[in-house]
Image (cartoon, rainbow, N blue to C red):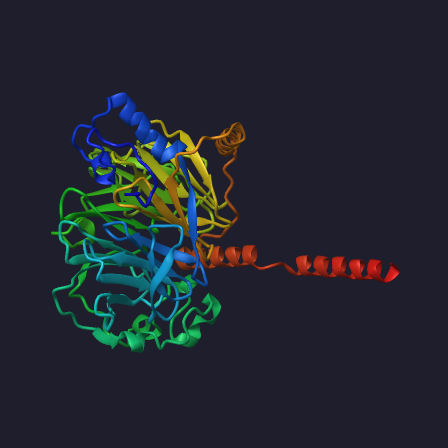
Length: 499
């Protein structure tokens, strides 16, 4: 049977399933040839498979089902869409509405393809019953935009969410919560003011994402935000959350105060964090929001990315705050001793304009992968921090990736309105292709790191406003461009008249 993501090395028994390829049991290959085949699949052979079109706005969120057959997407057009992602003839299976504006997070609930969760700029969490196609539960516990949703394989009925309101919340689908309501899918799909621009979102009763989003009544305190789901409250926006892969109580959050915190679910106080991770060489007077953080497959390493900075890897066993008497939470750091708190730095990509994630990739987390402002995807070798591939295929900033659960394939999205699907292909690489690949890497390695001029004194919301204004300038033609186009058109008309 043809595997939907191409042909992979077979075992001695002829098993072509991705599970046998990536299992922890000894392989029939020699160690060296197996590692070479792995590296080839994750780097050399990786190519753009196909594009998925259908959204009418930036695609902000992606998630594969646990069997890899379906892909879930969320967009600035305020919709959540379900796709058959297994072949180039990708078909949209369903479209879920209900969010007032941008959707920033989507998630399949563990092994189930029947329940999906989404979160957006309207601060709502929406739980859709895909199987029955009748009901949607709206959870109104956050006061500002929801930025990330994460399930926990060790607690399959639960998911965690984080928000620009600084809270981290835990929900169990078996429990009933206050401030929730039921909608039929017909009611949800009747929303007609979805997908409005950030500047026009006031009309929906939702504040613009540049101001933290959220419903105006919840922001003003007119309604009471429940505490029953609250597990952590921080004095800063929380961009991402990730569970420890080996236990059901440790998790990390990335924040706009420049820190990544490791918490234990059994302790709920802000000062009860177990460890914190940050590069103390970054000027603490400037904003350097950590927009993404992820564990490796064993929970031994953490990889982080920040706006205006590089990507950093940390050892979860080290506690530099304790070892050197630092205080990250209060920005009370002293780097006179030139303490390098990170284990490795990954350079070359550009991350100045949009919120990006970063992930370990590979069956043993051998690689680090992230998007870049110039429309590319960078893959670094984890142990050397060397760039091994730069993938081209997007027209604008690449912000999000979702990984196939069993095959060396993934989906990517950003400010484009489409999704790219990448997979290894058994094709010979031409000399021209190889030269292009090496030139891209060389240019990235030699590129000077330059951040755009911005004022960070206004805090996270002012910072986000400036980023959005910058992106709008990039998308929209300037008046000088219009004048030049009109001038060119008039010149062409004059030439036509002379002819």
